[in-house]
Image 1 (cartoon, rainbow, N blue to C red):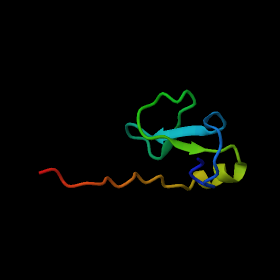
Image 2 (cartoon, one colour):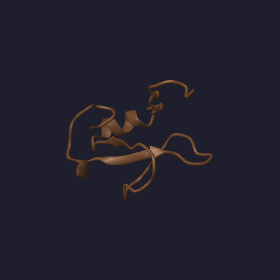
Image 3 (tube, rainbow, N blue to C red):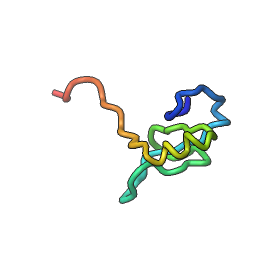
Image 4 (tube, helix red, strand yellow):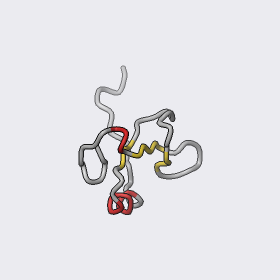
Length: 68
């Protein structure tokens, strides 16, 4: 599913991005789909690509307790 338009596409038709490692900010492209981390998938629509540049990609909030 595209994170911008929420359209459903085959996985092979989507571009995968992962959170940047190290000092970089924002998601980075993962064309081989082997980088660790939760992937963000983007369709090939140019409008989605433009909006993705502004996408914050905030990590999901974890469920559960604080660990006792």
